[in-house]
Length: 368
Length: 174
Image (cartoon, each protein chain N blue to C red):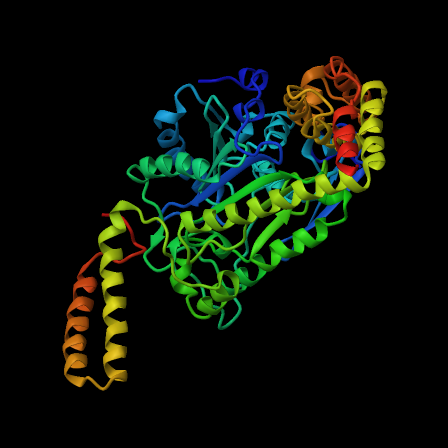
């Protein structure tokens, strides 16, 4: 069994590796909701009932071939900070982190599959892949789900599909989502239009940490809203098509910014570089938004390609709980801002100043 | 006033939340409040914390007259109105009335056509065949082909009798 300290030392596989369209799509995630028959849903169950369900599900999950040497823990055995670390890595939901007795989390070594026991449903299984690979993320979960259904008696109805605590998840119980980095659409004021467009065709757009969270670092989560009446593959296909359209819009917005407002772009990226490499006190929100600009810079080719990986890891490492694990003690907000600035300076040491030469001179020759 | 969690520091954070229609209060010191995440109200549920403190929230059952109750888990129609969630899988049968409209508003469609667990595949196939036959019956009636309609009607009642014998869908286990 993997210990929490091992889990911490290893950044999740999806943070280190790249996938298709990874310049704009950070990650693809799919989650499935499942419940057992003859047990009340977690939100309505008594403590003993939740413990009984956990006693049934946790061993079945631990026995999955995917879960060899997995991390598996009851939520009551984790400290507030450890739980927060899992939230910051998107391995458990914020709701799950607030749960008490009878709730558990199991995840594989690569941290690509995490399974929450007694979240809103008895089982919430999640799969993460880098870049745009929704179908691959689904297939990974699908086989786990099929393996589990032979062990566990799922609540299923031939008309309504998988029965979930909330009717908004009924049917497939599937939520597929992608985390998109859209600085071009934000800088060119097209983001609201994009969000409204997605909403109109039944997709939800949220901030970095899900429902009700603010859009930080120009990151947006887009997901299917409806779960009933279409197959898993059809839902994913539709979402995938919309995401490809957004990617195209983002690429066009970036090109247009380079064309029409190169000085503004140079200024924004230059300032981000200057502040991040020299600041000694930096709040989370400012850091995230500036790191987003560095990421944009590396997409545009003004930084080295390999710098992108540092940015991806930093986005997580500068979050409050990760900082406190690094410091091995509790930190107040001011102390966190100091340590955050220090970590960023250290990691960006090798980053050379942005070089717009090639991009802008190419543009000039185009003009002539 | 002392902190409800550590019982040693003075409480400086006062938190109230409406749980199942009753106002619950908790008083915390600064460090316990941070520990429990009270500073972030969206990620904090007082009910879970009170349960964690050993004080299981007592759920008084005051069923209003005429309020439908799930015979398996005791969840009521008004609980559903309040939380937007059901108590157990069986609730979907108990509160079936009006559910169709709700689902249509939420999902535009009301019938599952995704993955089916192996143990339900046979039931599912029967259901699809039945729907297919019913569609054909309507067509036959519409085109005034009464001979065909009569034949289909017999086939439907035969198919329905077969599904009656099959295990009920949501009871589930073989």
